[in-house]
Length: 367
Image 1 (cartoon, rainbow, N blue to C red):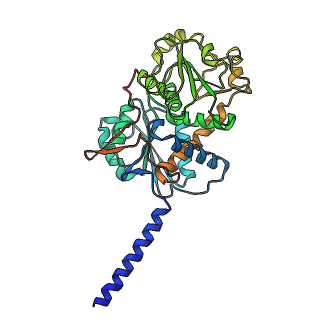
Image 2: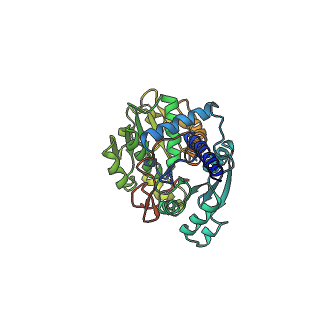
Image 3: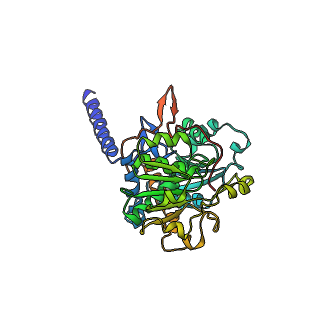
C-alpha cells in the first residue's frame, strides 16, 4: 500500500514539472498579479513595452510573424461611435491572429438601454477574452476596465485616441527611422489626438509642438504632466509649430458630436490649414499625417494630402499592424515585458485604473 502511494506522488511531481515548462513559454496574456493589463492610454505601457509593440507590429507587417495567439479567443468590440478604420482593423486583426471579433453596437446591447457599465463589464468578462470600446466619455472606458476581468483596449474616447497615435508613431518609425532628434508638429484642434500625442511625447521623449486656437487647447492636466518629461510647446501660430518640424499632423476641425459647432469652429480655425506654403516651412524630408476622415479644403489642401510628403495611407494601414501587436500582447501574451505604471492594480478587491489621470474636458472626440 505504501509502495502504491509513493508511485502516485512521483507522477504528481512529473505533472508539476510539465506545468513549469508551460509557464516558461509565456503563452498566457500579460497580467499584473493575475489581473489583466489594459491599454486605455499610451502611458499604460512603459517605454520598453511600447518599443516591443512597435517591433512586433513591424514583424507582423513584414509577414515574419506566423503565430496565432488569439486562437480560440473572442474580442468583443463595443461601438457607441461609428467607425471605418477602427472596426475594420480590429476585426481583421483579430481574425489574422486566429481569433474572432464580435461587433457590439451600443444600440443593440443593454448598455444602450441603461444597463450600468459595471454590470456589462462583469457579464462580458464571463463570455469574452478581451474588449475594445469606442465611445464618448473616457470615464466609461475606465469603469469597464475597473469592473471587468479581461483586457480592455481604448478604441477612442473624447479624451484620448491612443491606438491611432500608436499607428502614427509606427509610420514615423518606418518613414524617418524613428522619433529621436525629430520634431512632431500638431496643427488644429486640441482634441483627443492632440492629448494622445502629448502622452506619446512624455512616454518616448521626443519634441512636440502644438498650434491650437485660443479656446481649443489640449487638456491642461495632460499637458502639464508631460511637460516634465519632454519638450512640449503650445502656441497659437501654426508657422511657429511647423518651422523645421519633421512630422506635420492635423485633424478635422469639428469631430463627431460637434456638428452644431461647425460654423463657429470654421471661423476659429481660419489660418490653421495645412497647405503647401506651410509645408515649405518644415524640414525638407518632413512627412504629413492625418488620422482621417479628411475634409479637403478645410484642415488640409488636396495637394498636401495627395502629395509626395503624405504618408496618410501607410498611417491608415498601420492601424491594423499596431493593433494586432497590442492584441497579441494583452490577449495572447506574446510580447512579454513587465507591467508598466499604468497597469490595473488590485485595491480592496476591485481593480483600479490608472490611465489618463485627467479630468474629462468638454467633448472633443474624433470621428
